[in-house]
Length: 253
Image (cartoon, rainbow, N blue to C red; front, side, top):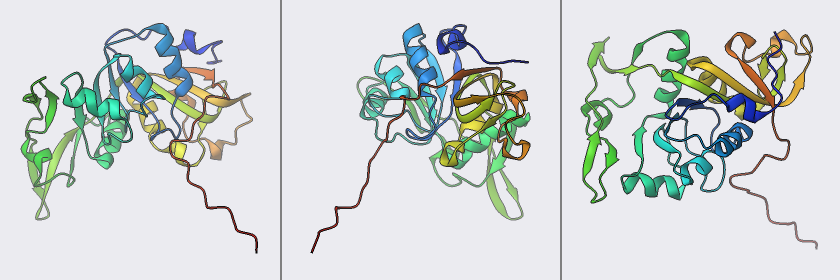
């Protein structure tokens, strides 16, 4: 089955207002910026997004956030996004902060059909006890807080029950995809992308390069096409570096 569509706009065209999205990437590494741009143009709003972070103020998910299109974030990291922090503290955005490994495992469990699991992360903290602010009021009071989590003991150690995450749609960026949806990711871009893809009911992939079936070595496939519904070409110019670090120029002697 050829899953390649002619445009990102076509790929995101049926994402409704209020949809739950699982969005791959970390910071600006491996983010589906072409599909995010198409969502911006589509005007889709009220989105409930699961992603490690929310991009930066003027790129990635930060574009949707700044435009007021995101109503809820499930993340592990506020990162470099000042608008994310401002909206959260002003009561404009609901935020469920989750330990990063727990977030990854909640997505993996959702894709594997496992409804919940026990983890030691967060034991003895507000993650266990509840009361983490999910939404503030304009006056700074907490209007919605996290609930306490079920605790069980295994082998003399306490663990928290965490529920799996599933999504309506996943937005994913791959280095290479074939027309059947088989994908390979480059280096650190393999972070949350496969997890998001498997956790969603409908998965959209943008790829730097689209190849014919059979061109991808089966051993190089990180995400089988069975998890992918739509493939589009990524904008080759749609890349940014979040924080550039270089060595000082060498002084000639």
